[in-house]
Image (cartoon, rainbow, N blue to C red; front, side):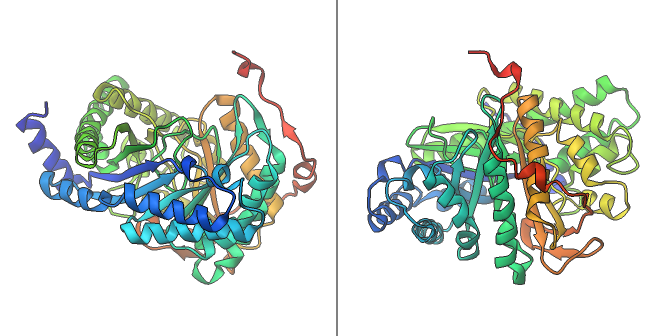
Length: 454
């Protein structure tokens, strides 16, 4: 039960501290759409999505009005398209047709994004999966709401370096095709190690093959709420700090639980997980960087930043687990550069570098996220950065991801505007020393020794 005190407290968090439900995401299995004809599979995909998610946006708005809780995005995730397209897609154009169908379905039902134009290739690529990855630049350039992801590594299987090389080239091609709009296609493409099956957040969302036919996952955010709570215990010891974050995360997760159960009941779709992630926005006060600075750092990137982020991530998860039995996804703290004003300010001040961000990803929930880099960056350099991040995920048995945006015509010191939740980003400096010989070796980096547990 949620009592009146919690309701009043929640209203205060919404009004003063930017608390929101970041997304209601309906996962839809497309496995029963498989066929050997591209037109037929597109028809089946469109019909199933528009039928199953017909009321998703309507129900989201009803819940917003009923409880006064802002729901920023309504989204759909589908089975990784490489799995369902393998029986009929023989060319890149075939996969692009499926992407266009997903986009058309997203427009019909009114969702903000649809994820799942994806491939899972942590141990190797089938010819069809390679085709899908090669089709990503054109698919994202020709659609508006489609998001794409590729899982290239895992703790159990190692890292497929052939796939890493290919996705580096894919990122560069996607940047080129959308150079007139800030290389925006790259903002809708993410590369994973240990991708979770139940992630509601774009661009990495897809409906895992271990899930049921449909599912409702809810992603909750609230950096502003956590910052406000920490400010009230300024100067207190770490025990008090941890307890404050944990209690606040508990309250935020309760809001997500309420919305998730209500959406599940109204839609007649099973409830999956709550993803409690401190995902920032460009709004003033809605910043993960400012939380870390409230702990006592002059700027994010200063000595102590990684320790502060580790503390924050752990206490957020502990508080979430207290509030719901079904916490999953990428729960913890995100550190995207473009979506967080505090991160942007730290980059501009020279306090935060790509190397420091990489160190921080060892303890946060995702990885190198929404980082704009010079447009003339070589594909092999991008592949090297991806390989480094995948290695962190593989060795540490955690999810890591990379979303890099090489912005055509921009160099270090420039900025790029994305708009909306994506905000804007300074172009960050990268290490220009060559790694092409390493990337070109091909094959697979083996799984680490601690992976052999079965």
